[in-house]
Length: 262
Ligand SMILES: [Mg+2]
Image (cartoon, rainbow, N blue to C red; front, side):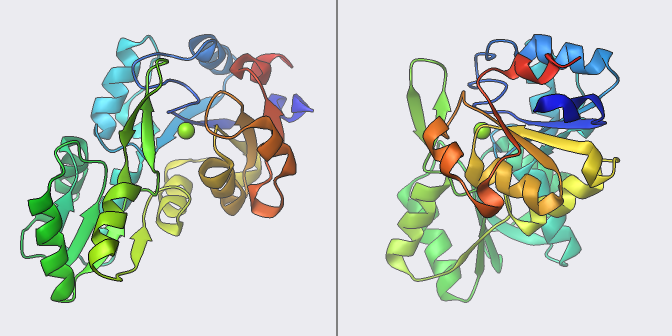
């Protein structure tokens, strides 16, 4: 079953629903990561969360007792910034928060109210004027991108849900039929940054996440193995029925099953 874990060199963990529910570590997360590190595995984290930068996420993990560094964290904000840089886009109108703005500035992408490119992300200060501006830019021919495609983002075990990218995308699409290119999981842009960041061969990598539609798909598109953990969005029934690129290599209930074979 999970015997392949012995030979794996790199483990990439999704964050929300896999390692934490934002402000709370999930059971066994810390123990599992420590065990994997003791066995010599390289650990990376991957998320569509852009509220914090890679540096901010590393600091948050450190504070919760998980040792890591910004270079070990792949976010959809980083993916978007890299995508723009690669494609010669140097100015973007952004609906998003500080973490995303930081990733853009690190790649020398300017934030500009007159840009020809609009980037949509989680924005807890989203309002009608931001929507109005995005719409005006689209009317002038701007292209639209998003850092993910989630309806909401879960915070803590009390079930609080905060609107994510999708409600903002839909608000804009209620005004105009513009296509929106996702640059987060499981997009090609995200695949490119994952493959560039991780230094192992694809067959030596496993991606662990709670969502077959983002984590498992991305793993399959990267040629990695995938493990679905049932602590987040995908139910066991859904996971067992999954086919093709949605099908995980293994399904686990608890994160520490990953280290049970050592
Ligand atoms: Mg998740």
